[in-house]
Image (cartoon, rainbow, N blue to C red; front, side, top):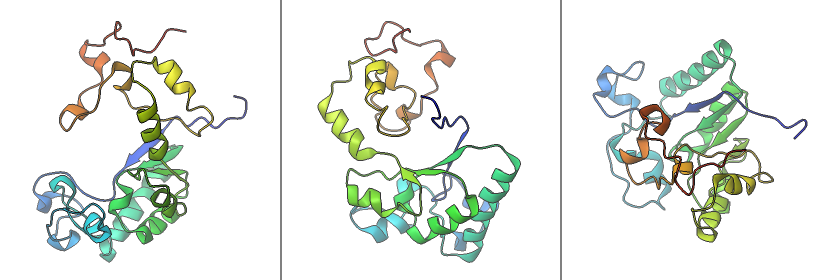
Length: 206
């Protein structure tokens, strides 16, 4: 479509947590005070738990700590100064207080789309602004309920064309259902020579 913005270089950024391991070895967040005390999320409707407890045992950053806030915002500003990026895809938005995203967006000053993993429109709208947009999970869930995934990816993608910027994760075209880790983090099929060209959901040729 003429004049349509076509993002090519999207940075995937996580500001909620660090990886599993010894946090004392992580730079620049190597102090216990940089993290929330460990607790499990037992009630996903409890905003305090979602924002302060550890997601899947991942060390949860304390954005209210001035140093953590400053380092996260300085990092994104420095990164975008050095590299030609079209936008940012922000992970685990609901696990971080909204006020922090106002700081982060101000430092980034670029198009941001956030992962607000919810089918609740009010929850989605709560984060816009400060974010420019969120992944359209309400539409995703309604589409998943309405359509069987043995459609061709070309037909499925056509459903997106008037809904904003389409985002289709690799593996969808192979019929992967995601499952739980590590199954949802498998390598790109074509890289390991197991790409299924006969699958009924494989992308059609032009």
